[in-house]
Image (tube, rainbow over the protein chains, first blue to last red):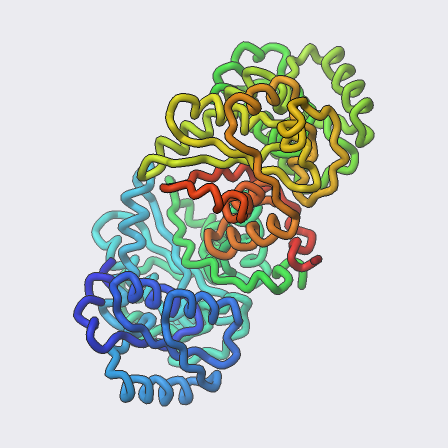
Length: 261
Length: 261
């Protein structure tokens, strides 16, 4: 909602971002609803279903080599050509605040007060935003990170943000290192980041599909896997636990994770 | 809800049914919530995931050969042994009225008045119940049936219920012939039953998974496929169309329909 409100000021020249996932889709949809042009830089190896989704929301896609320098250069070129304003996927105040509104919606819709909330952490926008939104409410805030990209949990232990991560996890939305703005907020406001294995993520994902009938991607299932983990269960949280499922951006043309394993 | 209300009177000896699908799961769950014993007769070739779901709701399962006479005999034996009351999956007044409450929930939750509603039709409990619930509301009622089990649509054309169907469709919940009680209600109260192909069902199912992020089974997707069909589009219904998605009872251990095709 925060994002939508701010989009109006960009009506003239449009907005742009780099993302191969949910941020690209969300920005494209939000821009379309406000009649704002949207330009997205996506890696050339993005899955067709994600490309199709972004296109269907009317955004213009520029492909780049799948690495950070190519992404930055391509984005600069797009900005120079279009004058569009960059809306970062996680490492920016308004993005963090906007992502925190998911927690407000959750609290408003939950039938009883929450004891805790768990969100996945990749770049850390959703987790930092949730922590800020929950600040002072008494709701305990936890992050969930895959073992194959646990830079945030490691950084918290070491008291210093890890700027890079050698990611190896099925949770493709969480392969990013946690952002510079996001990390200190998480340090101060998040009780703990719980690390789970890809096996736990796949099991949690399948359970969400089978019982809640929800198509969620591995990154979303990471938060549910954390809730089911011994590390979290040992904390003995009493009362309802909110879990923010961040997306269902999955390529259904491919075999499901449990078909492959 | 109708079902739950009536379950209380069966507390002593329990309830029973025959079903390999959603009715078995729904009855088992409803019985569990009321502390009523539940006995389910399932064909021996039922998928493990359906068996597990019914078991997890605490029902006792008796397996039978996968044919109608074996099913009837086994159910009689279960009833003789337990004294449980038979709750038919579709061909009974209370079942029909109970299934009609889905329409009431839909109307209550819809943000604006519906112009039409579409439900799948197998045994016809959901469609007949919906038609009765919608009677007098001005909402137009349609059924959706797979071409490989279109006994209801054919019966409507012929003015006489077909008692058997040589079913060949992916929509496993709709392979039953329409019930004797259900058919005349559908004849009087349903505007039309729209027939769709398995290809249209699979396409609709995939779209629901990809865009609504809902795990629905082919039988559910049949109603959405009907809404997308030329036959329905030609009717020029103006306004919101309600679609009742009747279940997500799918064996996720197997490849998805579009992986197979």
